[in-house]
Structures are given as C-alpha cells and as structure tokens.
Length: 190
Ligand code: HEM
Image: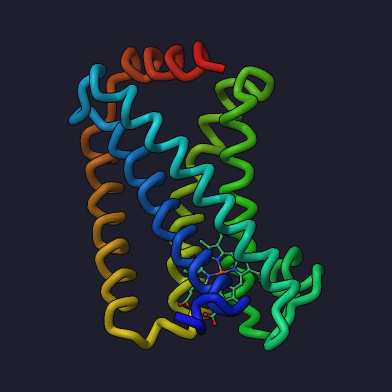
C-alpha cells in the first residue's frame, strides 16, 4: 500500500487508470458509431465516451506531471514533452508521448467542433485508433508492472476487445444519413 502512495506508485496508477479509461472511451465511441446501436441508446454512450475520454486524458496528464517530480527517476520537461528525446526507454516513452498528443487533438477538436468544422473533426476522430495502439505498446514496454500476470491479462483482454470493436465498427458502419444525425446531436450540445 505504502508503495502505491509514493510518486512512482501515483505514476503507475495514473498510467493504468488513463489507459483503461481511454480504452473504454475509444471502444464505446467506435461501437456507438456502428449500426448495432439504436438512436435511443446513442445519447448515453456518447456521454460515457466523452467523460471517459476527458478523465483518461487528465489521468495521462497527471502521469506525465508526476514524472517531473519523481525522486527515483525524474524526467525533465523536455523528456516528457518531446517524443523520443529521453534516454529512458526511448521508444516506449516516445509512444506514450505521441499517444498523449493524439488524444489531446481529439478532445480539443471535439469540444470546439463548431470552430474546427466537421471535416477536421472527422479526420482527427480517427486518431484514437493508432493512439490506443501506441498507449498499449507504451504501457506494455515501459511499465515495470508488465511482467505481472494480472497486468499482462489486462493488456491481452483490452487488446482483443479493441480488435473486435474495430471489426464491428468497420463491418457495421452507420449509413451516411444516421451519421449526419449523430453529428447534429453532438453539435447541438455545447
Ligand atoms: C495518454 C497517454 C499515456 C498513457 C495512456 C500511459 C499509460 C501508461 C501505462 C499503462 C503504464 C504502465 C504502468 C505500470 O505497468 O506500472 C505507463 C508507464 C510509464 N509511462 Fe506512460 N502513459 C501515457 C503517457 C506517458 C507520457 C507522456 C510519458 C512521458 C515520458 C510517460 C511515461 C511513462 C513511464 C516512464 C512509465 C514507466 C512507469 C513504470 O515503471 O511503471 N507516459 N504509462
């Protein structure tokens, strides 16, 4: 328990919370865009999608900020902000930083969709797919808990579910008319 209250414990807990919340957000978002979901249910799924996306991002931010103050293996601001700059697990951490920027771009363009326009929003809204894969690789390769059976299971289960959701999303796309309705629903809020 004490270990999990240390800065390193907070870094790990925030990283795993961020990963799981972003997994839920990406999966629910992609599934909600498939034909399998009725218009009635879409509203609730959209709320879950947006909240888990924001909280996942905020936990990712906490994860990065606490790395700056950690006493055991402190990161400089440049190491946290510039992909592939750090000497500590360069590639794995580079993936985490890239994923963070991708999720940030999605959140910003979603909340200010009216400013950016539908085309930009739709294009940027494909980023969570590579961003999630980068997060998975980042957690698996950088995480000191990745050798634990439970953590390995977490990556395996979320990875398999993610592939299934992508297949469902690609196989059961919504007709263009329904997509317009979803878009109208999102833009009418906010
Ligand atoms: C949204 C983006 C991110 C997500 C979802 C994420 C997620 C994770 C996860 C799940 C772990 C494994 C924790 C463990 O096994 O104990 C981890 C570890 C780590 N992450 Fe991130 N991360 C993100 C961004 C970043 C960024 C921007 C940095 C900055 C360099 C970073 C640096 C690290 C480091 C150094 C570790 C190793 C911690 C350990 O030894 O367990 N991450 N991250």
